[in-house]
Image 1 (cartoon, rainbow, N blue to C red):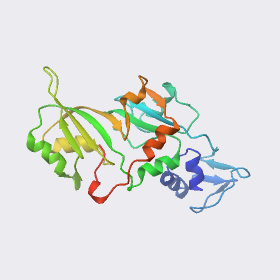
Image 2 (image 1 turned 180 degrees about the horizontal axis):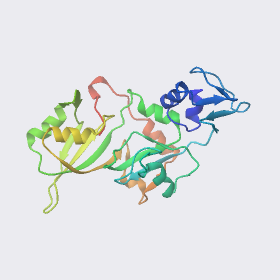
Image 3 (image 1 turned 45 degrees about the vertical axis):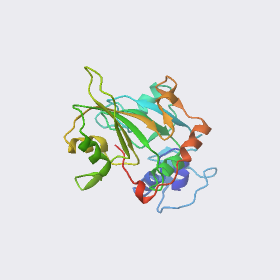
Image 4 (image 1 turned 60 degrees about the horizontal axis):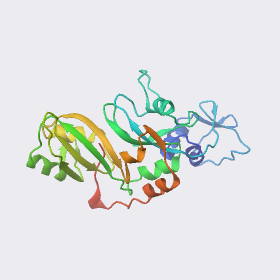
Length: 249
């Protein structure tokens, strides 16, 4: 059942399992009582919260998320969500889109939106290592010791926060210093917490690369559907080893 829901664009398989456990999924009017229940969507009526669930074609978009947008499909406080924004930018409004990974409310840059549950599940698996690169505008120049500490790791609230690589970009007169930081899969607000633990404040944070995809791949658009070849390139990211472990922003 959760496999069908994920394939239909409801969410990742783990999210679909949570929906089933919560009693929100029905087949022919009966609440699904267990995970792994079989379903024939051609003969049976599947509903989520009373609304029919039907298989839909898989589509994945690369988007340039602005600041002030939430990476969710609904916000009870009425703040703008990335799903609403994506529809305004040209994504199919009939698809059940959700993000692969997150960027927080104040961050911007590249993010993937999809209705392909299998793809989302694959990216969430701890064996995958899809690098993500960021540009961080900070309030002061980072010292050599601070740069070294970012690579070695910093303990913050019981978590070890570190970067795969950090490069201090050449300073420009009248502009804040910037760092280019590469991470793997990650923790909530990872970069902000890491830099703040070292006495540096982030003024602006932008994701500029996901795996092989960069800002140039948007081709001047705020949102663009990825081709099968581009998706295949993302899926070919090598498995992680224990020595590779790192965390997202």
